[in-house]
Length: 324
Ligand code: ADP
Ligand code: TRP
Image (cartoon, rainbow, N blue to C red; front, side, top):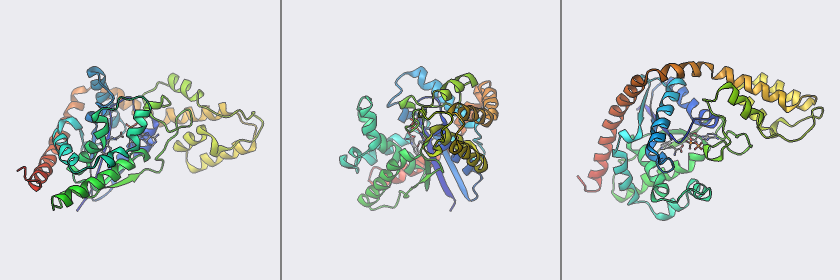
């Protein structure tokens, strides 16, 4: 049987380099993998735990859809849809919560982090991993390509699938495995993990002027220009390496170690790389923004395909627990 890949991104703000190098780039690359199929979606039900404004939700959702398509998502190769167009996942979430211990969800690092950062600890935020498990299990996904921060959620999904299958003596759910990209933890401008909620992102949508400003603000140490510098400890170098060929990265590393080069120059090189890399994306994005009906149509067709599968799995699960 073909390997089924599935992943989601929340419409909780603009996409940034962490989302791209941690997740989206591999989502697009997987389109060329033989004997496989892909389901990618905009996780708007999940985003509702943090985005509680209708206009903002609509705008972010449109933006993520346009960005994915502009970055190379091909609707002929990937089923692309909006999570809330498949309401069956919320029903499956309920079934899963009944076999999931409080203790499992209480161990979720991402929940604890979000609460520590001041988010309101709603029931939805707490149950977030159960909804994510439903997303994954309802399509009987085999592999979930994500960044490092989502791995624990996938392990919880494995547990929930096992609890359900055991409790109801069924084999309805398939055990999914996480898949990390080569760069599962991209640093932000302050050197911490790049994340919308840390305000340290470099966004794909930024204009050259905005990019320049944010790149110049990347935190570096105060080694004077003439002194040798350590590329391994430098965020500018880490980000540059994401775009550079091995030879280019080695050349820059050698210049760091030799001394005589300031961080400003490395930042300029990084800016050039980002601008060049995303030039085709910018152009495609501008075109797609003029064709909102096309974007809506892609999502609509994706939803119809996803929903048919979701309905089937949900019915199997309901039958297993005596609800059908
Ligand atoms: P954020 O942390 O900015 O809220 P999301 O939670 O929406 O981003 O993440 C969407 C996808 O991007 C997930 O697969 C996540 O693992 C990945 N991702 C997010 N930030 C990074 C990062 N700094 N490095 C690598 N992958 C990341
Ligand atoms: N929780 C993921 C994130 O914040 C988004 C997501 C929702 C997801 N459902 C999913 C990712 C299912 C992979 C599979 O990035």
